[in-house]
Length: 88
Image 1 (cartoon, helix red, strand yellow):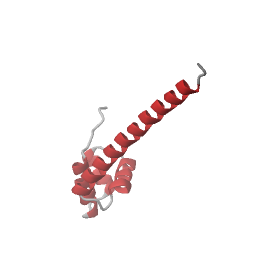
Image 2 (spheres, rainbow, N blue to C red; image 1 turned 90 degrees about the vertical axis):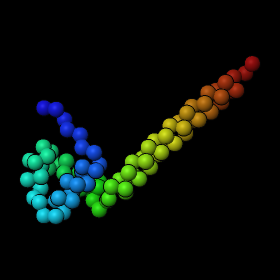
Image 3 (cartoon, rainbow, N blue to C red; image 1 turned 60 degrees about the horizontal axis):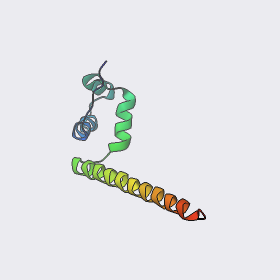
Image 4 (cartoon, rainbow, N blue to C red; image 1 turned 180 degrees about the horizontal axis):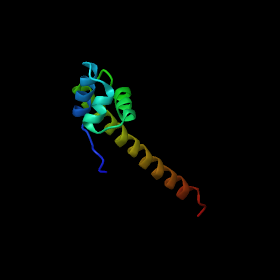
């Protein structure tokens, strides 16, 4: 069965439907998701609006990029220390 991918906008709208009174099982059937997925979404996106989620996504991307920079610098530093520690 092909896996469905929902955007953050769609997830927020599904959670709004649930907050408006729709039953969880009905939403799961309607959108083809499991109850656990709905619970995970509710844990992650509860109370968030679409701009909040976009901001969260941009912060996660920036954090990932900064971690990569630190890892690269650490690798270069270790290589330089190893090179300088050798007695010529």
